[in-house]
Image 1: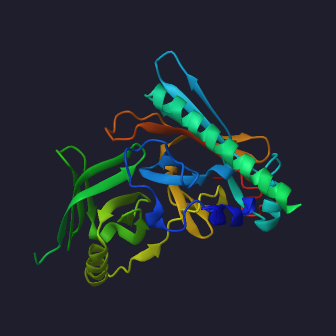
Image 2: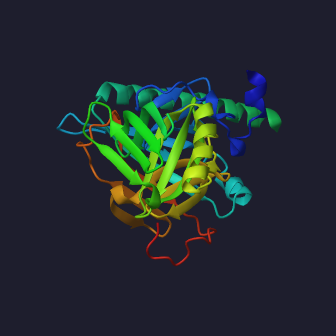
Image 3: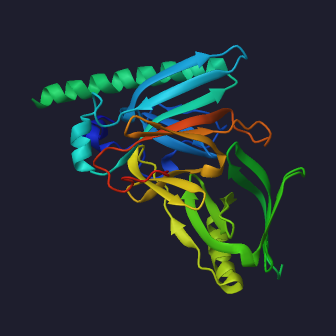
Length: 136
Length: 186
């Protein structure tokens, strides 16, 4: 609900509180959890969640062999949005996951994922800036 | 069964996803066989260096580190299996399993931990994910602060992953002191 999202500062992202809050494991493919605003990435047989607030851009590309590539770039210090400087002050010495790139055999799935992430991000950014405006 | 425990539906996790199979844990060690034959993993008790448990969504994961630096991850244990196997490892192998926690906060900042072949990304002292450096085909330094890991393209394992990780990169800010001046990292 609204209480949860209002209490969530951008430097304090939490996609899930508990291990069992994650959506039931399905196929090992990139998955979107709209309710928790999370992108789940298959890494070594596990689904690893990332909150949409950590994502900066997403793009896809198709090669001649009908293989499809998706690239997700995360927010790291020194890039705009998500007040990274506040973040690096709060977590000095932290190492950031900056980018992941996947190959997929399913271009439709990838373009759907790209659209979903973009929409999710747009909603999140809009809500955060509205919240920031109200706060001032 | 007096000597050991047999578990069906235990998946071996790795580069290409997971493979279902059957796991036997007995006084001589650990034996995992892929469902329908093929790959098998046979670990002698004497080669087990360490054992870990981690709660993962809806099930439990057993990590087994062996002598030569390899690390196997088996998923699909019930809570009661964790208890009985913990006792078994203690009494049979003299090893007390360590408990690890999984990070599900969705953050992309934390620490990088290198242990044997494994690179672990830790968020708030919990494990977010692990990759094996044995599968890394190339590492690149980009600028002063970014490290790129490229993974082998592996279509042969017959695992079930639909989207395959090709590349991952980490940003190490100047404020990080863990890896300063280390040419070989990660």
